Each structure stands twice: as C-alpha cells, then as structure tokens.
Image (cartoon, rainbow, N blue to C red; front, side, top):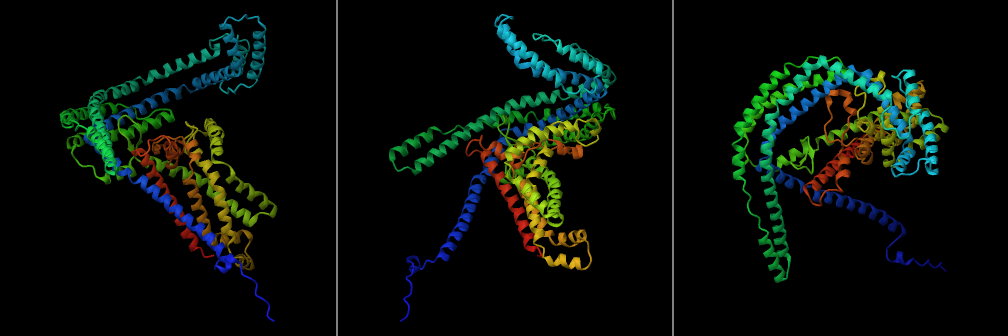
Length: 631
C-alpha cells in the first residue's frame, strides 16, 4: 500500500511558498526604495522649480523700481572703495613691515601680560567686587581670596608664553613687575607701556617717507565723494518705489488667495464674505512713472560724474609708487596697479550703459536662470536687493573637494596597495580596522577637532618666520578651505581605501602568477600588472570618494569659514587658505531660518537639486567605469 502523501501547509495549498514569500519580501523592499527616491525627486522639483518665476518677479521689481539703474553707478563706486581699501592696506602693511621688530616686541609683551591677567582673573575679580561693596580688607573671606590669588599668580607666572623678541633682562623685569603687582592695579606694566610707545614712535618715523603715498591715497578716496552722494540720493528715491511695489504685490497675493478660497467653498455666505474681503484687499497701482521720470532726469549727471571720476583717478593713480619694500605691501600695491585699469574701464563704460538703460525692458525667465547659475553674489535678507548666485558656493565646494582629494587619493590608494600587496597578516589585521573605524567618527566631532585643534595649529605654524615663503602664509583665518579639505580628506580615505582594496582583490590570481613565472619582482608585479588591471576599480573608488566629499555638510559648515565670496585667486595657491562657503553648507545654515514658501526657501531647494544632479552624475560615472572593468 502506497504511503500517504504529507498534508500541504495551508499557505502552500493557497499557492504561496516560503521561497516565493522571501522573494516577495526583498522585491517589495527594492520597490519601496524606488518609490521613496521618486517621492524625494518629486518633492525637490515641486519646491525648487517655483523659484525661477519668483526670482524673475524680484528681478523685474529690481528693474522697474530703478534699483538696477542705481547699481550701474553703485558698481563702479564699490570697485573704487575696494581699491581704496587695498591701497590703505598696502600703506599700513609697509609701515608695519618696517616697524616689524617693534611690533613683535609690543605684541609679545602684551600677550604675556594678557596671559597673566587671564590666569589670575577669577580671584582678582572677586576681590575687587568685594572691596567695591565695602567689605573689610582684613576679613577672613578676603584673606582667603588673596591666598587663592597668590596660588593662581604663581601658576600663571610659571606658564607664560614665550617671548623670543624680548631680551632676557626685559622678560625678567616684566615677570618681576607682574610678581610685585598689586591686586587692585589697573595700569599696564611699565615695559608694556614703553614698548607700545616705541612702536608708536617707529610707526610715525617710518610713515614720514611715505607721506606722498598717503596723500595720493587720501586724494584717491576723496575723488569718489561726488559719485557717493549721487548714489545715496538716488537710493532714497528708488527704495520708496520698491516698497510701494512690494506692498501692492503682497495685497495682490492675499487677494488671489481669498478668491481661490471663495471658489473652493460651498457655503454661499462664506463665499460672499471671502469675495468681499478680496475686493477690500485690492491694492492701488503704485506710482512708478513719476519717480522713474525723476530718476531718468539724473542720467546726464550720472554720466558726467563717472567721466569726471575717471579723469581724476587717471591722474591720481599715475602718482602711485611702482613698488614698496615689504613683500605683503608690495603684493597689495601690485594688485592695486592691476585693478586700476579695470576700474577706469568700468568708469568709461558706465555712461553708455546708463544712457541705454530702460525700465520697461522685459525680464525673461532665462535671465533669472542665468543670474542663478553664473551670479557672483548670494545676498539674502538685505535692505537693498536679494541676489541668488551660486557661483561662489560652487567654487567653494570645488576648492574644498580639490584639497580633500589631493590628500585622500595618495593616502587611500597607497594604503590599499600596501595592505593588499605588501603587508603581513598582522599588519592587515591592524591597519584595516583602524582606517575603517574613521567612518564611525561623527562629522560634528571632526568639525570640533578642526575648529579647536587643526585650524589653530595650522595658523600658529604659519606664523613661523622661516615659513613665510609658503603662499598664503601667515594664515589670517583659522577656518578656511584648506582646513575643511584636510578633514574631508580624512573622512573620504576609508571609502577610497575599502573600494580600492576590493578592486585589487578582484584581480585574477593568474595575473600575478604569470608575472611571477616571467621572473618579475613583487614590486614590478604590483605596479605593472596588478595596479593597471585594477585601474577602473580604483577610479570608481576615487569618484565615490569625491561624491562623499561633495555631499558632506557638517564639517564644511563648521570649518570652511562660511564667507560667501569667490576667493582672491591673485594670491595663487594662497587662495586655498581663504574662507569660503559651500553648496551643502548654505542649505544647512539657512533652511531653518527662511519663511516657508518664500523665494529664498525655494532657492535652497534649487541648490539641493543641483547637488543631487552632481552626486548622481558622479555615481553614474563611477558605475559606468565599474561596468567597463576587464576583471
């Protein structure tokens, strides 16, 4: 008799098997991931694409109200002020360079005194406060405070900063003066005062040969007073017009919202009330023609003022010295010499632009797109006009990424090659976990390390005199592109290392065996056979490391300096030691503070879309190279 077949599970009887259930589970997860990605893209597009019509309207108001006309004169005026600032910096850099010895001696004595003052400040402040409140100086509490002051004084005197430019007797005299210093003393120590007077006398002495240079700078500054007054007068006029247009736009937006709500309501009484409110919110058409006519009447004055300023500056700048004796001062002077022709050309072209300007010229949507992609200004929340130009943000992100990859590629690839080809098993068990552990460090912790340690150390190192030949040294800002790039390099090394090592592992063993059979050394096999065979995989590692760097937010927000300005490339490699802002940093910094649905809010979403496209392009390129790999 045949054996009885086992009863099927009720799920099996219904056509559902365990294998099919598992397959369905993972397929649904993959489908859910795709749905979430599509929803994210749809949300970004919904919030971001509304930016360009809104920005076009802002640019239209900017033109119709006359702000654009005023900026035709404000631009040359700003360039003139910046050039005057460069000349002043060159003047004072020359004086301070000549009086460098006196300046360093004064600064060292002041830093020593400040370090002492900070060390004894807590008990000293308590003693002074009690004395001011009339507490008996011989009371037990003040006696204890004086004992604490003596302890803090001893510790402070034992941890004073070095003073290499002060002589040993001078430092000893200053320390002795501080040791004898009364708790209630408020005046500076004698040596600090003497060195400050010496520095002041040296500045005055070195300024006398530069009196001609000073007169040229003063003449240069005063030459722009007429243009400055003209811009100020026109600014008052156009600001009133802009405010009137903005009020009318707000009322019209409210009226449209009320009419839309009235159309969607089913209650006749509510519909009637909303319609009445919409009619009451109807804005009066602001008077634009009158103020614009007054503004256009200033065209001859504007053109004449620009021409007069150009003629005056051409004569003044001809009197500038050809060079200065101190490197930093001479660099600034040469920058002023290079900027002068640009300013004169800008002043020469201004009258034609002023005469050709028209307020009724339409503002197309393409202009808003072009201003966003190529604009050099990201100005938000200002009293004058908001501008959304991502060029400085893109340049900042690019420069930080360049620094990070320059550091991370040789370290990550080199570590992968060594661990995979040359290291012993014990070294592999130590090096790989350490490098991969870096990924576990929170980015905010790395940001704090950059602020408190790396940035401070780099700036202090840059102050060393024998490193003054390095471009960008001494570093003025401890939070800059280079500091952020170093930290991002540390964050991207594990990605590059892991993927590069995987690429090396995927090289068939037959390649190495064939090379060994031909008598090649281990070094030759690695760099002539293994590495070229894994080239595509290593390139994928670098591209994904770049994607990691581009998308990082917290480190660049904390460490890059957050200055929305294209770095000054005239300083060459030194431009990497300047502060900058990035695409990711601007989103994190401003998104929580902007009004929901505003043009500024939507501009940040457009930046997010741009970042999404960049990272997607990097990953797609990496995927393409990965598929082309021959192994």
